Image (cartoon, rainbow, N blue to C red; front, side, top):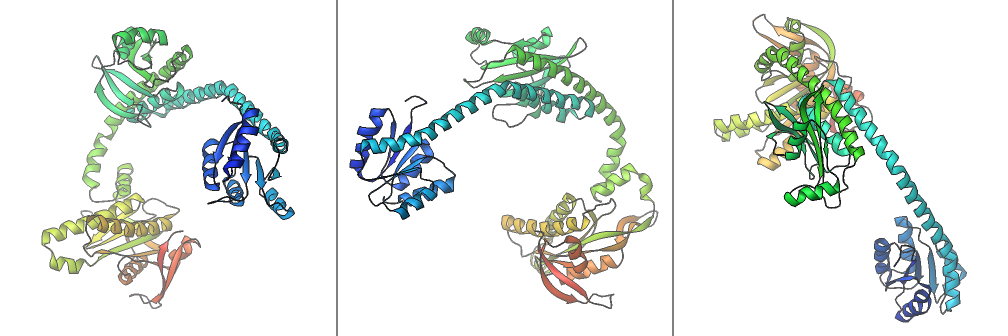
Length: 530
């Protein structure tokens, strides 16, 4: 059948009627018939074959004509339908036309009657075919322009990388991804000359979604040829066939571009495609890769200079980081590294959100388990808490036995600190549930309290021993709130609820009395953040 052949689906449970339409109407007029013996089979064929016209019987098993029309509307299919039925009435006609039927014939009908109905629908079919053909022509006409825009955008992105001074591990895979995208290659690699040898530093295979760093010596003879000659190597299909006679492992398309700084080759950028249907690379592809290679060479040289400066300037900071990061939150480590004066004693009043979490069931477990197992399990639970807090950029204040305290909005400002604290509390409960399901339930979980208010935050202690912590009524209330929380429960104060807004889901708990306060506080159980 040709592309312009009209496909007609006959959906009728009557064999005589189907045969009549095929033998006396469709075949003599060059239409392609599709046959369905019931409504369900008709819908399957409609989705698979996309017919141009549907001749639909009203009464059929499994799915009748009305149900087929409903399903067509539900699926958003606008294929012209001619309804065939023995039982005709004005009510049926009105209903089927509302459901999208284009025409209506009563059985028994003549060849001329059916052809008249089909010809009325064919005008719509041909208009749709002409529209599709016009759309395809427009798409083909725009393909070249789209590709040129894509090439320019890729060059612009790599041009920005030249001035961003990023690390090699970030830069090199980005260059490979850009190269494969701009010439529509299936795979690519970037090699650098190190110690007189070509070393692959970023690679993307046809199975990868993106390039990744690597560090392997190159066995790519085409890349070595480009490095040695300092000239691009872009094979035409005819040249590839000649070389493939000697080396059947060659891909379907390949191009290698030397990366130069002035006249010095610093590496090679290679792209290739392995699929049999892959298009060959053109001279335009080679030109684009060469332009990309110029940008990449500058970016690589800048990255090398930047890395050398970074290595010299961060050596001392890394020593200090190693000493502190085991004991304090990353935010505090960064604060000390950026401003050593911050280690002076003293504090300042500021609004913070506090999270207190205590392991429920720990005492009972510790009475029954070996001391070594108790310590290992406690460390695991507290490690989970630490990961959750740090992932929300909270500051781990302290461990108190089987409890943990964290603060948000200190030392750095966090506009959404209440939300971070509440999110951390819920995430902690989810993480413990997952751990218990995965690693065996030890009968332990967290009771958590969350509160917001002012406190004094800073380095508290002496010149010889200090701790970055928060002190005040806000901390006290949070701790007492945690003590009222049941296992797996997150309790928040009315102040925290007011900050979180109306989208959260809470359950009223009532008022509780807190040691150190004369008035009770209103408490809610936090269920979700919405």
